[in-house]
Length: 399
Image (cartoon, rainbow, N blue to C red; front, top):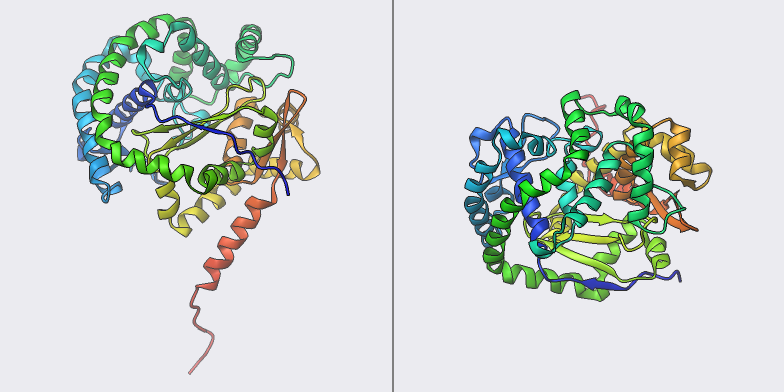
């Protein structure tokens, strides 16, 4: 039997800075929503729909059976609102725009700046040094600029980023020409690279207020959090192992040979976020929303099938799968063969990872990607089960 990774560090301490970043994201999302007038900020929640006109839904409807959670979120957002409103004036438009830049313009993913917060993993604001902020900022910046981040010649994230900054400066014009964002947002992203210190200094007072609110309100969720931690420890961490198996990174984590940190989030109750990269084996973790396990149980079969079929319905992803039928590929090989940027490839691979269609393993210091049968078997099983329940009438009969 194949070895299964089983070394988890369940961290119960709340990630206050990550949570504060989510509050800011919810506010910027609410500001830009076309149906903003239908929902006050405290009840608004980002919606997911094929129609971009439907951008907000009500948290009271989404979590109708979770009264304590709804009360918690509404209290946090109500107290945060005046500080957010005061902060996002004309002088901070540059920061606001960084919340409207999405990888490949896909708004189902966290935007650039929200992604920075979710990679910080900081419990208390005093731990957020400028050096730590700058490191994660630069990592996300280079990724959104389309710089290839895979490189087997670097042993840690700091040396990798230093090398890639040099490559970025040398290839700046060609990278700019390939950016998929609107011109205004592209320029905003580029300017942020040299304005990071100013952005950090301006954000700190706002983050301080938001962290204070969160620290006071999170105890309201003590029962839900206890249930959450108990559940992810059940059956020898089965819930987490299932996520790892679905994404196909078991061999990656075994090669890492280190405990995997598992954090929890309150403000993003359904989130499942996995971060891993071969260039810095310490830079691997999972962020789970407090109701992530419930989301799995309540999500209907048709919604799951919709996710799978939508992911398979993209021409670039089909090309990736076609190449991986031949053999395993290193990321740079894939991007070169497909004539797409590393950022675009990363986006498509993450989509395929989510449904278990591809997996990753380490050979030396390179991450290779391969096809996995599990994801395809699952969609076949789901479709077969759905088809078996269809009550089809014979409309060919004539009286």
